[in-house]
Image (cartoon, rainbow, N blue to C red; front, side, top):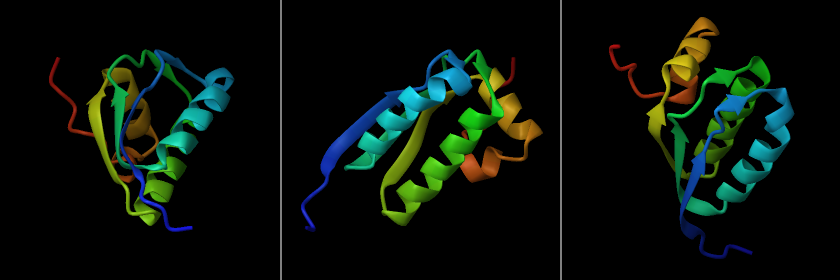
Amino acid sequence: MGGKSKGEARISIPADCRIAEVGALHTQLRGALESSQIILDGGAVDRIDTAALQLLVVFQREAKQRERQLQWAGASAPLYDAASQLGLVEAMALPAKKPA
């Protein structure tokens, strides 16, 4: 159809971002792909599991494939640490961890 994409989508990742929340987050992320610019805010994340991290990595790849601009408004220490433990910081394009 080739229609013009919407402007900006902002998604706040929930504080408790584990497998039980992945379905709702997936729905939000899928809708955000219609926007030309996507902002993810992970600043409130207290808990995150591998399933949620996998979803975010796949979302990053899909956004890049669709030529969407994606940026992080923030990444909490738990989010950064979990991504770091799995070697996903670069794949997720997370901002640098702020010193405590």
